Amino acid sequence: MVFALGVVLFALGIAVSIALHEAGHMWTAQATGMKVRRYFIGFGPKIFSYRRGETEYGLKALPLGGFCDIAGMTAIDELAPDEEDRAMYKKATWKRLVVMSGGIAMNLALGLVLIYGLAVAWGLPNLNPPTTAVVGSTACVPAAQGPAPDYALTPCSGSGPADEAGIRAGDTIVAVGGTETANFSEVAEETRKLSGPHDFTVERDGERLTVTVPVQPVERWVQEDADAEPHLETVGAIGVVAPPGVVEHSALTAVPATFGFAGDMFTLTVERLIEMPAKAVDLWHAVTGGERDPETPVSVYGASVLGGEIAERGIWEAFVLLLASLNFFLAIFNLLPLLPLDGGHMAVTLYEHVRNWLRKLRGLPKGAPVDYMKLLPVTYVFIVIGGAYMLLTLTADIVNPIQLFQ
Image (cartoon, rainbow, N blue to C red; front, side, top):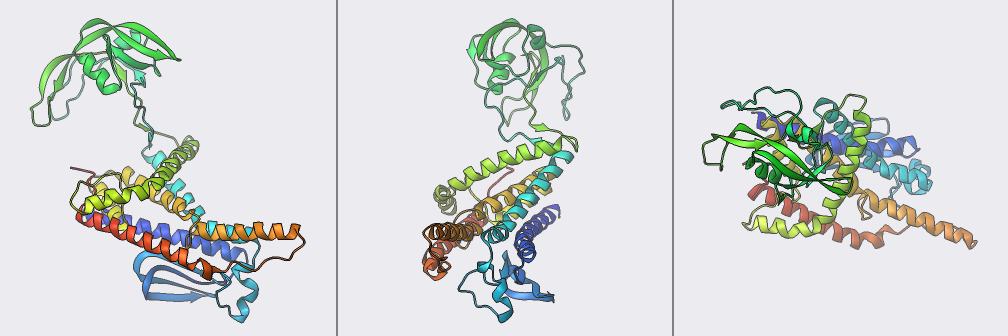
């Protein structure tokens, strides 16, 4: 039941994201004096519509996107007599760019709102965790650990061995007892073998220091592998804690944190977008029976299923983060200078502006609007390739979906 609710809620979140994207175009067009003929969510057969003022609003059967029909988006658009002076292609360059970027701005704004809510309600995860053994903090070392199911650590107070030896937050542990360590897992593994004073090598401000740490013997439940039963064992511990995976924020500190986190997400999204063409091979491999790479793209259907699985396990913070990442992807994808995307129309508008500016310098009148009919072959190629990619992604999501939880 919760799974189905999660799928529906995430699909609804996608629909709202698309609706707001198109609303961004509509509101900016209306604000800059253009005529918006239609505003629809979905494609295909019309389910219902109503008219308010000069605009028809409605819903169509196929929830694969939406559209905002603005009079005179291109020079080949047929215009009614009352639309001649309000045609989009006749408006100033800055107005056309504002309208074309309105949808992108709405997705970015929605993504920021979702991230801010995530920061206040749950905290923000670290998208770039250190790959080395950077010390987040030092602490006392509990002497024992309780039994299943909680395996609760006994209380402790004061400083721990690492703190007493002079290890500080921000230090990177690079060797334990003479054994090189690359990450926290290796530091923990080597430390468990020790007891009493041993040398630890740390990097601090570009220098390597060796400190002697009195490794403390403690009792911990240890499980050798996934099939083995946990058993109590005496191991070594020094009281170092890795940087937190999630950082909590107040309503005030969440503001700068939101923009910083959004910047990291923006960078990661651009990287994923650049990788998309190469991922077609991995998607085909998944469709033909190979293992599904969790880094491959997902369709609207696949994202909704992932949202359902996340909701089923009560990880609502991941649900919100997934929806925020979708909005950033929509914004960045639409910036691509390819028709029929917003970025393609923006590229044409900027080309016309630069061309007319150069013509003005030469004493020539403005040139004619770009002939979109000549751009149709390139547009069709992009639509066919993009459609095939979407179909391949959807097929992979159906026959070999990404498994977040085993």
